[in-house]
Length: 275
Image (cartoon, rainbow, N blue to C red):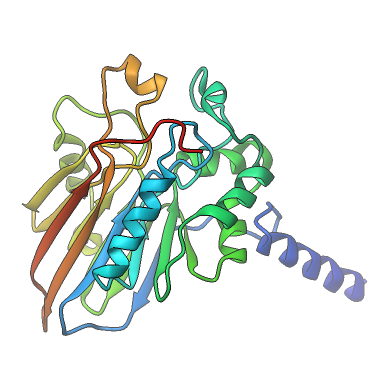
């Protein structure tokens, strides 16, 4: 029996590593990842909502963004969720806006086509679209992508903390629609952090529109653009997404952050049929 149990444990562990549900794997949420302390200024590339598999994806512009970030000597890119389009069941008619269907096809396409640049690592959290396969089929697609791409690191679902020395950054992919004012959702999110968990920088995906709160309750709030043109869902709500990315330059000191600079970069002419 001990031998059989050992074999079962080994099998479940291997299944988990490949991104499929098992009784031995828990969903990673709000994990903290520690990076070495930095005392010299450093740059972070920030992207979100790439929605690979959607007919509205902007993968050519995403590749251009990675090339530009490489020129800026960015070494780390943080992705705030919805790397892929998901299972097509998140809103009515979504499945007809997709050119890829099924977890296997999206994983394969992402492995082969998501940008890769020398000396750049991408750290990604899962969003609602990524997690849709887990809910329906038990497949953690980002874990499977990261397993095959040595330049992609999977941090878990919905949120993750990254600590660079004393600097605390929170990557978040919330739920729900946009508010009447761009800053409202980030304000409410920041207000809900317990004092001990409050980050220095909040990076917020999901909404597809840009906003910057430079100092709200001592938190830098940055709401991110996307790499997907207007879907029928957004059109029905009268919303048009911002397409672009952010280069965040951080100037540390012994206490944490001395100051920072945001370099927002937008694409005003998206491509049609970029798939």
